[in-house]
Amino acid sequence: MSQNFYRVARAEEIADRSLQAFVVNGWPVLIVREEGKLYALINRCSHQAASFAPDGRVRRGAIMCPLHGARFKLENGECMGGADYKPLMRFDLREDGEGWIEVAVPDEAPGAEHLPVTSLA
Image 1 (tube, rainbow, N blue to C red):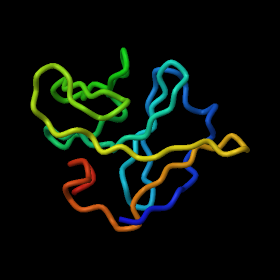
Image 2: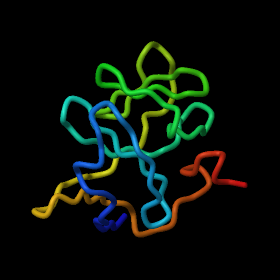
Image 3: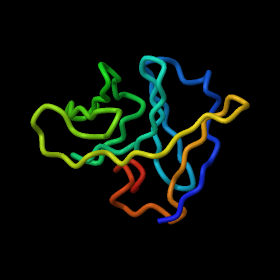
C-alpha cells in the first residue's frame, strides 16, 4: 500500500498529554503528545468504532477510549488490560525542519472499517 506524508499541524500546537484529531487525505488521524514524544494513530477505537477525540484521555503511555475505557499503548497501538481488541493502526510521523508535523497515510481512501461511527452518518 503506497502512502505519502501530509502536513497536519505545527509541533508547538500539540501540548503534552493532549490529543488532536485531523482528517488527512480522508483518514481519521489522531496526533498525541506524551512526555514530549509525538504519536499518530487512527482516530477510531477498535472496540466500538468510537472517536478518541475530543474526550479521550492520555495517561502513562496510553490513550483511553471515552466510550468504554479501553486503553491502547501509544507506542504500538496494542490494547492493554486483558481485552482482546485489535491494535490501533499507527501512522508514520515526522517533524520537518520548519516545525511542522507530517503524517504518512495510505493513498487509498479509507474504508468504513477505518472511520469512527460519527463519520459514517
